[in-house]
Length: 145
Image 1 (cartoon, rainbow, N blue to C red):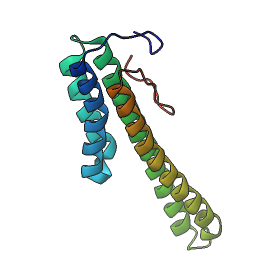
Image 2: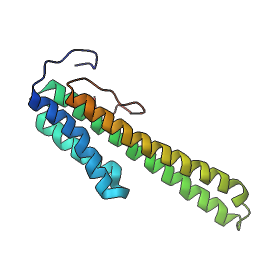
Image 3: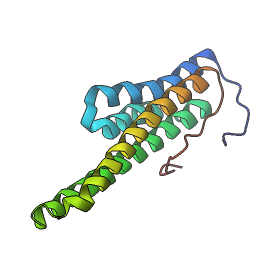
Image 4: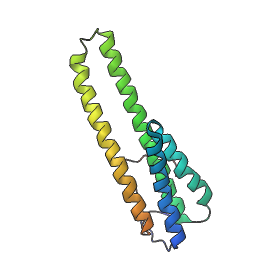
């Protein structure tokens, strides 16, 4: 079902859908550096359990999986850029710090903003699910259709 279609959902379905978002959020927060992986596992477990039982729960769980996979990809890209910045600094015997320091600070700020958005979007998604409303995460790559 698309996110624009209306769902007739039970209280249990709303709870499962909200749990997909909250499980991903809680597991990600508890595992810190494995945030994306734990979020995918948490939401993925609910998606696998409930995808055939409820289109509403399946859509919310799939959105949570896609969003957490996206956050994992973004984190891996940020880590790769950070390693490259450190490598450039080391290879230039510290002279590259003139360029890499501002880039590193911008990367750090971007990572902080993405982390905050991840937290806010996850809470908004859980509230929407609990209210029986569809939700599409912004910044999410739709890997699982």
